[in-house]
Length: 320
Image 1 (cartoon, rainbow, N blue to C red):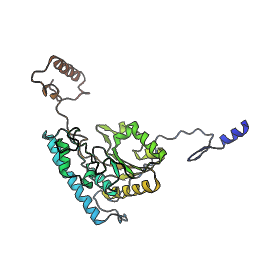
Image 2: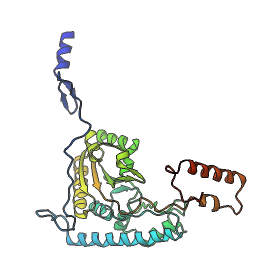
Image 3: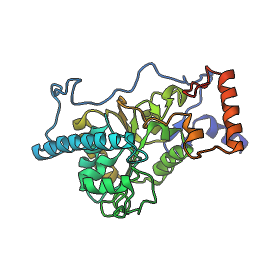
Image 4: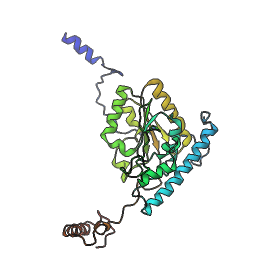
């Protein structure tokens, strides 16, 4: 009996994805691969269609609307960003450079597909009919805001437009920083095992607020993480609206017909800071009190001493 068991083991270990063979040579798997996963695109750097690109799936009507909404999104961002700089609203994050991701992915989804967004996806709402007035209501937190001012600016939501209700597949959009959270890995593993029809869309612009990807991971971007969990994955030029549209449309078809998750990595070059500039550090001590209390004066003293001791670690605009 023992002999038979031994023969069974050495012949190859069986798993759901096939048998694992045994070898007598010790081999460590390389932590990286010199051959990078390619990036899918239909447009070149000048916005010209690459030769032999297939765009038959995109009608003229959809293409014109995509372009129009991308321009509208950028104009809206400019107005609200300037309003934040003027102190009219407390916070704002733009989608500059990511308009194609927003609009093209929304165009490829059905209106009743649920989208779980991060804060850079207002274009999805714009595509689905969220008005500029509704955006303004939320950013200013007035009485017409659906959240009644209980949430900070740019935290949009709309049950009517399926920013949160149950439907066919779910599209979840997030940044590269989100992949450093344990929830991301748990979600991929859960979706793969349960064969959930989910499209995971990662906007990889290389920065998680102020943390560069070199401080987040050593892998070939995000797309390889899907393979590790047994999920079909693809890397796409996030600034190519046509490529994004075709990819998300195909991913949705796979998610529905095959009942399985898809991971899409959209490579993007960030064009503005991750968030708007912080107030001067000196305002910590002058913003609230006319005459600062003793504990605040003590804190200011400690801060100045720390900055004086470690100026290279604490660049500051506070006069010493």
